[in-house]
Length: 483
Image (cartoon, rainbow, N blue to C red; front, side, top):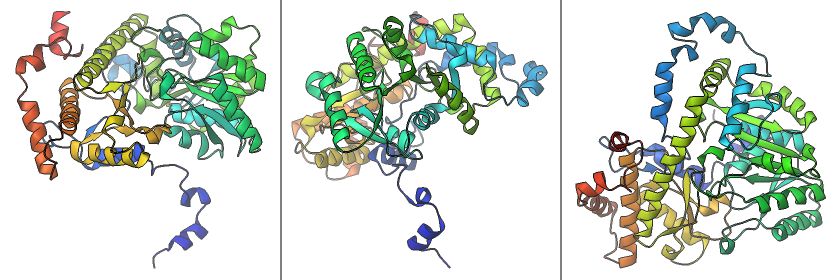
């Protein structure tokens, strides 16, 4: 006997039968399209290339080199067997002292050593997802709200709201000023919430921004601190992309701002961090809550029992991040390689008249395709996105999934693939844009489109692909041989 929807709703909780996870967003639909037809250079060359996943894979050669030189960092090989028992039975939710010390040190280095962090305020969690939910549980009750400037990471709706019952209220930002958050927009969002009888408990910002790849300047950060102090609400700063900034202006942590602001109530300031983006370790699930509020630290540490980082992972991370020479080299090389990827992609797009928001951080571009929309609506954006997914075979994320108020923007991730895959992805975008602009014969079917892409890529001169300085990313064997 099968279960009907009605039976399911009676037997299961509202959470189990509801849609609070927001998995039906185009952001996640793009991942499903990739999973059902993933690109492979030889086994599936016409598959979907994953450009919707913000992973940092540009420095894994450095990671692998360190692991080979330090086998004792893992407790599994013979070199680490002497520490196996102590690590295997460790279950203190404070975390290994050496792990907290190493993470605090790395957080300082990732912020240009402009500020230091107290290891006793490091609270671990299962990735940034768990850290965001943890801080939401600590600061707000169901139906309370956080203000969030748009566009923002689609996962925030799930991370902060699904199980906590917390609401997210968009703060209007526009392309006319590069989507910068303003005091006027904050006031407007706050006042509207007050009129709607919604209690605002905090402001959530992402710096560097996901999806914009921009950093907040000192003046803006000071304005945000002044705002939350006046309203007596919390400021949660997601800084998980801190070490991905590759050029000026440099990244400024909220920790640096409050060091200089003696009037700031530090009890209202909290940082979410992770090693998923800066180090490229999303699978290790290392999330961090760093709060200046003692009560929040105490509560979060108790809650971390539900999402601890494994002791084996803590041990490995502690060993790696305690190697200052390695950390310094990694941060420098990561920035250099991300800059090269960013430059190659933006220059390649510019050659076909496609622009991106000016940015200097993150693992992605905020690409402007509004000129390709049949009309300036979100329906037209979704139609274009479906074409890019199913015909161009690229999983890029539409701006509407990031709550962008203007149609035509797309987030494009460029650091989660090797050099050749990046070139193929760029060729696909360029070919599509050129064909659309030139208004050539309509693409009658997918076979014609794929054939066009293959011909376009194969016709490019080999020396253009292999020898042009702007085309090679720094981890290419050719580049390593020259440096």
